Length: 184
Image (cartoon, rainbow, N blue to C red; front, side):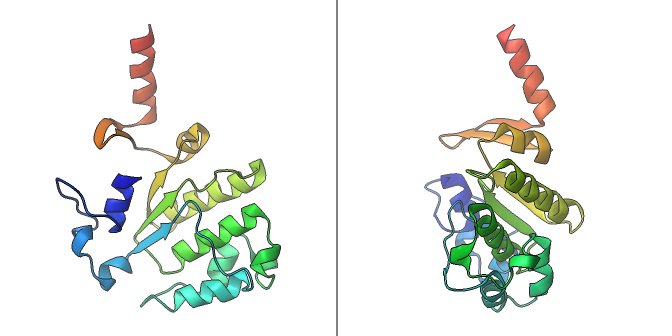
């Protein structure tokens, strides 16, 4: 969490340096922030607003946002776009979080545990969304997760970080081979 918060520009490093999209996050300005999408583990939002209203509100913060209706449809909320957020299921609320993270048209999106606590159908929809924005839209995704099935389906590169030290940086097949050899 600390490492990701440093990369997002929310926390200062106690040592070392970081660069995200060629900028030190500690000095990143509004133009740099507009290139990022951030979806926190528990975002929270205005329950009285609709998915379309809150997405439009967030779109107004960015210089080149995506079309609001397209974003609401992209996250699978076309039929619920005019429902009050307080009436949405947990998975639907998580999709609103994703809409807010992508509406600014980011180059890089941070997703913190995007499928935690969701049912199988909601998890699969979110995984498909992540694959879509990465493969079809070219958005780099930094995913933090403890869900091995998320890692297997979504990640081509993974890092294991413990107390600020990178313990592993590579692909999942290589990690599995390495762990298999260590346990043999």
